[in-house]
Each structure stands twice: as C-alpha cells, then as structure tokens.
Length: 271
Image 1 (cartoon, rainbow, N blue to C red):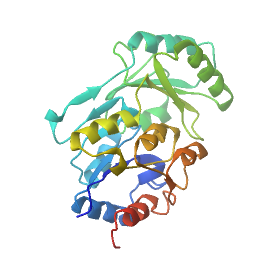
Image 2 (spheres, helix red, strand yellow; image 1 turned 60 degrees about the vertical axis):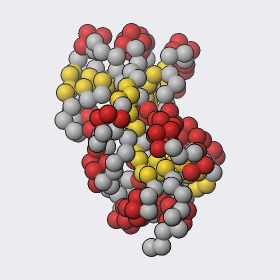
Image 3 (cartoon, one colour; image 1 turned 120 degrees about the vertical axis):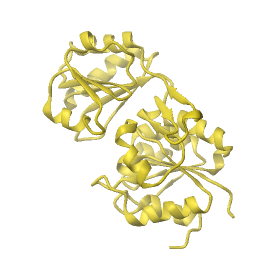
Image 4 (cartoon, rainbow, N blue to C red; image 1 turned 135 degrees about the vertical axis):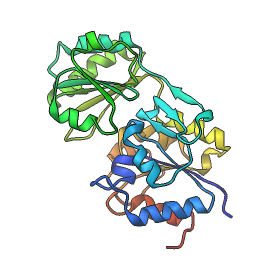
C-alpha cells in the first residue's frame, strides 16, 4: 500500500461544484482513496450544520474543521475532543458599535448553531436557516450575550475596505478578518490566531501524518494557511491568484473534477 495521506477538502468552490453538489466522479475517487487507507476530512468556513450533509455523503469518520478553525470536533467520536475558540463578546460588541460609523447591510453573529441577525432580512433568514439553527433577530448590542464563534458584516463593495481598514487599526491584536468573493461583499471575523491550518494540524498530529503527506485543496483566502501548511497545497483552477501563488500546484476547476483528477494522479488511483 502507498503511505497514508491526510486529504483536507474545502467545500465551496473546491469539492463542491457551483450547484453545491459533489460530482459522481470525484466522489468515486475519494471513496477509492479511503478504501486504500487514506484519511479524508473537510475543512470549511461553514458551520457544521451546513456541512454535515457532505460529511455524511462521503461517509467520513474523521474530525471536521468548521468556521475556518474556530470550531472543530469529531461527529462520530465525542471523545475525540471539542475545540471551540470564540471571539470575546466585548470585542464583538465593539465591532457592532464601530460599524455604526459606516454603511452596512447587516451583521450576523453565530454562536455555533445559534444565529443572531442585527436587522430582520428575509433573504438572510433563508440562507442561515439551513440546518435549523436557533435564530434571533434584533440589535446585537442587546441580544448577543455569548461570545460568537464567527461574525459576518454584509456591506457594499465601496465600504468593505474602509471597514476592514478600521478593524485592522483597532482590533488587529484580537481578530482575524477576511472578505468573501463577489458577489457577496462580506467581512468574516473570527478570533485571532485561528485558521484552517490550526485544525488540520490537530488532525495530522492525531493521525500521525507528517506534513509532506498532507494534501489540502482550496480556492479562497481562507484556504491560504492550510495550503501553506500542507506538503501538497493545491489550488483549484478557479482559485483567486493569491491562492494560486502560494500553492505547490494548481489543478482543474471545481466544475472539472479538479479534486478528483488531482487525487487520482497523486495516489495512483486508476479510473
């Protein structure tokens, strides 16, 4: 048998096609990799409730990284450990306060599966109700009492950089911030020092896999640290330039079985 690899998969724009499904070819190659003894895990910015369906579809039995590393657990093994590092609630409220000086559409705070939405918004309620979380709508300064796992600020393109600059000046020591790809102008905030690589390292240490046998796939700026940490950091064909520049290799896009094709080649899976 070839030596075991640890394979870390981002979901949106990577494992998932644009219609949010996993292609049958990529799924088949992942199943073959697992049958050969390789370890497959998901590392995503999504909460667990909206990634669980893919975890089940791939029949995984591994830890999962959610909220870009702010939450990690093993769905099938409660004894594995439960890592939750939220943002201090005082910092979260300072950020809500600061946003009042800027124009923004909404602010969403998530405490694992509890969702707090600053302004009532049907479209957001629709998006965030996936997986049936407890949703509270209303001024976060009044309603948010627990430290949030993650915060999202939804704004306009021309305000995005202004808000990010302000957060950099005021909160650089305590937060990590990223922005989403168009068409969503969203700033995502988690506690400082957290990213997908932090979660991936916990899994690698647990399974005893050295970095040179870690393969990680991603397409966005929340994948940068994970791809840098992995011995094989693989950018999708549709990835942003920043990701392609730090990756060891670039595969096909998420619409062209980029993950499956690369794994078949690397792990010598005949298809």
